Image (cartoon, rainbow, N blue to C red; front, side, top):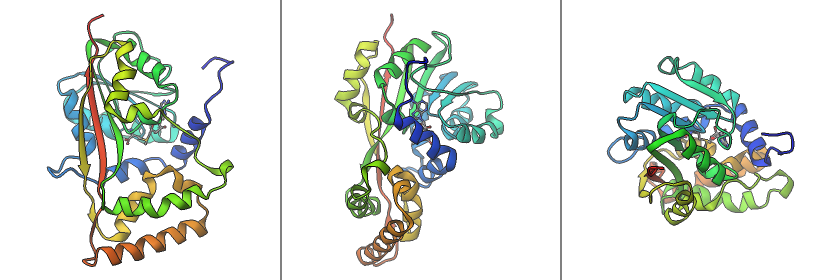
Length: 278
Ligand SMILES: C[S@@+](CC[C@H](N)C(=O)[O-])C[C@H]1O[C@@H](n2cnc3c(N)ncnc32)[C@H](O)[C@@H]1O
């Protein structure tokens, strides 16, 4: 970032949040599975099978990079805003040779044509100036290289996460503006047509698009524990509102799911494309 560029408020928020609670987003995501038992990290990694040199944008604690290492990739790199997250990634034995950088995906510290694939799990959708992130991705990818991203597609209708969000939304909306989560990301990253619009000018082919449901069957308390780190807005609530939301969620979950077990149910979309020959 040059002296004249200001760090967006969203990035300051993300850095502080992830430095405070490193690893929490990944453990929440790892608690959920597809019906075939795969995590969303494994599902995304399967879109770049065979790629040796792979970069993860917003790699956090290295969960996806570890899956890629397990799949046989051996030239791994990651970039993230949060040193707290990267410190966890650096402790993973399978990432001891990985090139892990503190920085912004808008300015990648890697040479042109370095990677066979670039991936990003639940991070591209949060990034400001996403056109620049995509231009940088195209620059560091080899011609024909793959780009695969997972983006949030909301709670599954009628699920425990859906209940959580329906109760939480009005409470999030009542937070004073100066304490709210800053606006982040570009809506176009969350749908197929929007991504195609962003990717085509950088030379990418049209994306393939798959939506998956991630299940979490557990007690209301387990679904609560998993949902809380998934929503940045939870960090803006004081303890009184957090407790109120928790009590409401547990009471309604018990009433709606008398068996005592409910389905977490989150939706994730995975888009994949290739860089056309330049
Ligand atoms: C929701 S978390 C997902 C982390 C990880 N990919 C996962 O799924 O477990 C988003 C991550 O993206 C990182 N991030 C957001 N904007 C970024 C940017 N412009 N450059 C680099 N990292 C960024 C955040 O610091 C955070 O670690």
